[in-house]
Image: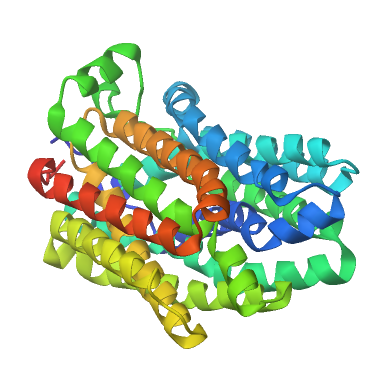
Length: 395
């Protein structure tokens, strides 16, 4: 693998990484806030819960456009793509803040999803292209800490703001934070000395065709799709499960979300500190094997302490595994890294679409325990296939 001319060009500084973490935190918060607020939004817009869940489906559906983010990044640069993504995010949040009908709100939330789809491949390629494989899990792990921090530092506050001041105040705050993130992106080093064309994170048609001809990469992408479909069955169902089985209120759901944020932070830190040492492939496959086991046990829980313990254990292992997956996937090919990362984001979105559509229906027709059992079985099957077909690269 070829490297850029100097370490100074290639390696990120910690201050620059912190700016990227701020942007990742904001889009994570915008994505995650809808889960505990689904019932609140359904009541506020006078729609049923199944209709309100379209918010999740539309946003994760927008992630299927991630490959276009790779194209945009290749043509105008990672930093410019992130800036335009931030502008799109602010527009979507403003539409949501001004919405008086559900479907206008849905449209604004779809714009937010588009912004995330276009910006995430550029953000990940910006970090991956500026960190060596042997320490990439550390760099991407720090970036992914923002996912956990969004639940820990953002969601409880936003649920409180929604209850006290309404949903418009929540998205006004998100739009204002988006302006700050745009300014931070502008402060990042420009792509003044981009890597050679062969190393750019591009996604031309020929590059995609070559990916389809590589079974190991296809197996990795299919693995990601299956695992995200499995866990999304639980993420779209657990709030209703808690409400129906234990009578949880919106504020209590926000507190549970905060606990999930704590364990996700621990999972992200674990991946940041240990994945490079124990091996990315072992970390990913071992983590998802545990995810499947916890989901099977979750279906058997009958008390609040047991349910909460298993839910936290599941989320801890999932966060460790998914954070470890990004550096594993990024190392499969240097020349096709951007294409693979963009397709990985699309597979994450596709899996979440399947889970978000099937989860409410399964929970309503078959019950929450059976939904968790099916999710655990799918996670274990996916992990088994990963053991057989996924190999570790070093690009």
